[in-house]
Image 1 (cartoon, rainbow, N blue to C red):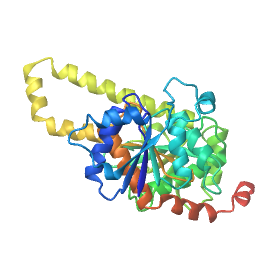
Image 2: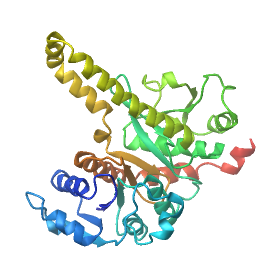
Image 3: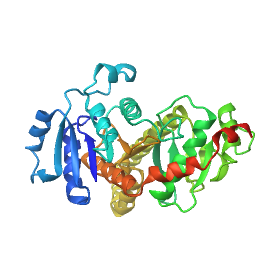
Image 4: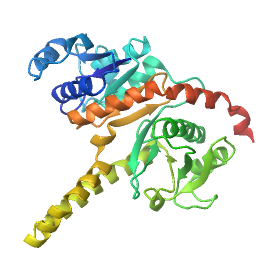
Length: 342
């Protein structure tokens, strides 16, 4: 197995990406080679600072002279920077030189580059970014799309259900994933045109579709896969991230108000650590871009070495569990034209 890493992507690149690869080298000996994509001279200088030194027999540097920054516009970045690290890395995926790609860089550029280079899986119209979210019981559920496509058709949400169902079943190990549409009411007739028409398609499909899901149902362990358009999904994801940070800061501030509270916090430190692990994006590694003809994990822009290491872990799991093969089998079993006319 070979994993390509966009070393120049992310707010903390290239240092955190290389340190994440360093951790992965030790933790995942089954990954035969890591392809480090980016400016070779910069990467070499960074490698010289790593202690202990890395096993260079499992490293291959792939030069890319340009980098797409977080401020570059998605609409023009790929055209203006044809030798960017994410474009070169996506090319490795296309040519089967890499089994999977990991990038903490510009999300729009990562989506565009992989779609242009690899295309989508046969039968899939649009890819979707899936985010793993925690529940109150310690389990997790999947939300997609969270940013690949802000404008969707009902067929896209129906196909997101298949993408998410396969990921939930084979990566999150959910035996019979429960699938729902994010809406503002549980009744069949509630929602907008997009969700109501998607509902009609989903209830005819060979999945465990349980209907509409409201916002207050998301974190209750009553759902395994939630589908929505990328605009709604991204707003929800960013709001949840901000709320988690805010609640953590409020709790810290309140705990510091008295010695008794601080003593209580010390006695509860294991519980707080477990809570952090459940809600920390570092633990999940990154979000899979599902529906492309390849395996791609999009890590958070502010990823730490630990987050990069875990993104590599998830990428390897996608390869090992042949998620795309399972998606293709499900997609090919459905007569989409007939489904749309029923």
